[in-house]
Image 1 (cartoon, one colour):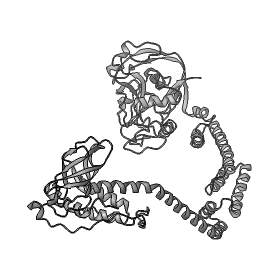
Image 2 (cartoon, one colour):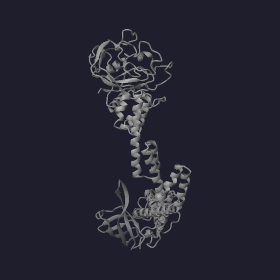
Image 3 (spheres, rainbow, N blue to C red):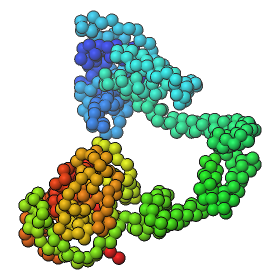
Image 4 (cartoon, rainbow, N blue to C red):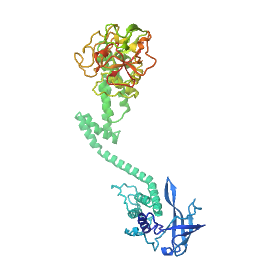
Length: 595
């Protein structure tokens, strides 16, 4: 079996080529082709003899790069002193008509007499390189060839082409295909004209690819064997796990026992001891459910489910949850009947946390969150006794709200907006730079977010006229919802004092309600209205259900806030901002049709 690529020849040529910019020492080139006969540029003085064999190499475009490729083999037939002739024996498909002139030829064996290298090449001594015998079928594959991962990382690739070749040959000999492919491919990056590197790189890479399914199968078999061995060991450990669980259960420490019960369940889900423990839990939960101790029944079920899944216990927990929700609904009904709004909300919030789509919950929350505003007529704008009015609050004019509507009793809270975001996937509001509780008004909400929330809640933002009508609470002619003077006992505005002890937002409903039962219509947070802002809109506003100007870049804000002075809390004060301009003092409330 011939070895067409002597490492001696390749090593010498590699080193000289690096130094001499590709001089093909020890190789030859084709100077002419006639049919199946080619003339070579080397002859007897170069060590060529009749009968020598070799290959023709050409750079072929592949994958956007020129790759050295063997396109034909040859045998020397006639030898002259400075040239020789050879017969082409095998030509690869597609290259039959190639003129081949100037192409590199690589002999299967080193030439006996090499041309003298240029002085720059001679200045660098070359290390000895060994002959690389081809692998035999009888060789035993190394662990790397068999797919066993090496504990140590692959060594660094050398920079010297001779070292690359030597290491590549060594990897080839020991059938370490992954390493051989890596080294031969590295050699080709330096010396792309070497046919042996081309052949062996491709062959080694093919070996690697071909071995992968077997390697994966072997790894899978090894993993399964390891799993079975571990499972067998766990079965032998079952008595220990049972004793550990018993010890903790006898000591009343269920949480510690769970760890050992889970181990038993993982090894043998039908274990008799485990089944008895789970049945005990199920029995206790059934008893607690019968006694309407819903919280305890749910805890029993969840304790059992922490060990392993059980459809029967899941169903039992569902029954207990239904009973729990119904009891909370009834509890809130009783609290509201006694006038304890906060207790009713607490009970119904518990329902919302575990069953937000409960059929009876929305109706009950409406009783807490909305109040009916009757239809009516009022004077909108600057009141006669107010000397702080701006021009946009004038002229004072009569407006009729023709239909009753429901309005949220308080501004939308942090908790309410969070539930909306969780239910719809809408972005949560940005957190302000100060701390807020769940019962504080949500802030940093742009106009579009407020519109989206109100739509989800079954309503919309109020018009500016609806907002002012509701804020007056049936008391026409006043500067503020409660009268013509203001103090920190009335509302949350800039500064603190009296009832107002909040530097920033306060819990909604912290101050007295107005005549319609609405809280925080002055102070705490600004509130978005539906209308575009019109500076002189009052001069041409319709007298019945005005909707605001037909266009405008800004939207109306009303009510003042925690960081503004009392002037902005006057009922007639009109603020405005671009609709995407959320701020940490701006919130909203919604309206919807009255039933």
